[in-house]
Length: 210
Length: 210
Image (cartoon, each protein chain N blue to C red):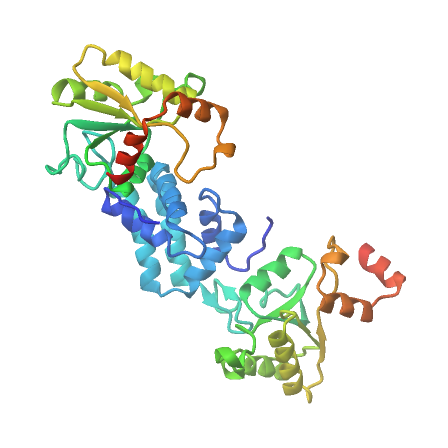
């Protein structure tokens, strides 16, 4: 949308906000006008938090998750189960799984999934470091939590092949009908798999009560 | 939505973004992760534009519009028609009218409209300064471009009464069916008014061609 501003300062700020994903110029203007009404100190806190985040965030040397220190708070936590590593595509997945408060192991962030068409091969991902990690630590299980797509499955198979000589169990998260999901809206692939991988009712009850 | 982060820096930035209007924590996270992938210099440019905007934007001493200087670029422009002043509620309205590129007069930003229930009386708005402005300048017409609500109409009547002894013509922007709007979806008030204020067809053709 074309907009004419009578202040270059406002225009610049709107311009910057509209570079953010999913933010058009109208929404950007709404944000800028809101900040204009906010206390100066609060706006500075906003700007500083953004700037500091970009300059100071590190990537954990062990798992590649975002971290405030060289090693992330998950990897240094002795209270977590260091024999389990959940392999995910990106840090958003770590946040999603952490937010369930149901998983107590460690993570390994691949930084993407194999996608030859987009030029993403094993070298572009943290697969070699995963292999090293499994080799040098007492890791008993790798839980593959990748997207249920062809690329995700390919990545799982590739990693499994790379690690086949190491004494580690590789599992994948369960696929099926989402909790609260309607059968009729599930795609055929998911529905077919969830029938093929059906569970005895005792398991179902156990899972619900665990 | 509840989220657990392994980085305080990320968490703080998400927290700050989610204070913006219409931004939930998921959207805030998306923005933060996008900025994390952006060049440091660009993120600094973003933070600086926001901070500078808040510290340096002024409000024009004549019309109360946002401005980079004491008097805004519209008020100092000798190419504009200084005999016409369009009275609006806020700076967003100025941007909307400017963006049509059809209006060449000046503005007066009231800073709101009369709303006794919200404690907004004439003293809370820039009505006295409008009166002074009309008194001390050769202003021939005030175009009232306020919301078509009871509060908007009340404000128009109040200002008209305040200025009744001054030689200024007061007009309001036309109300009617929006261009491209469907008759059946128009509210009764708008439809009734647009029938009562019907125009001869020649006027209609002139407006379209002007």
